[in-house]
Length: 86
Image 1 (cartoon, rainbow, N blue to C red):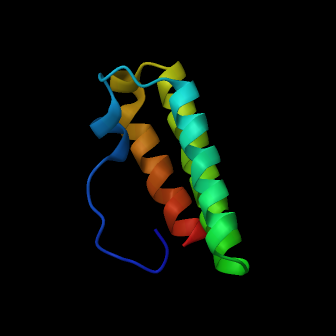
Image 2: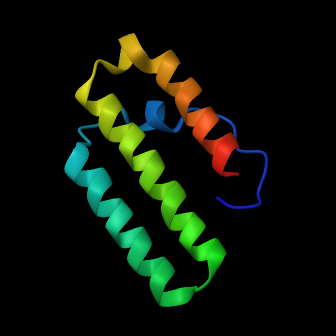
């Protein structure tokens, strides 16, 4: 997630259509944040939690909206958030 290049693909597309909802992503972000807090400290740990929250907000938005209609524009937003925070 941090300092690693080479991820390709659309994360949301891998999750759409399998019954995952906003509660699922909220819980995953909570668990990730807890795991980071238990195992890491410092600026990179905080950045990892920040990126996870940002992606979670985008996933929430996509779930609430028609993913097929807005998929391309949200993919661009995800890319821009990643580039901005990376």
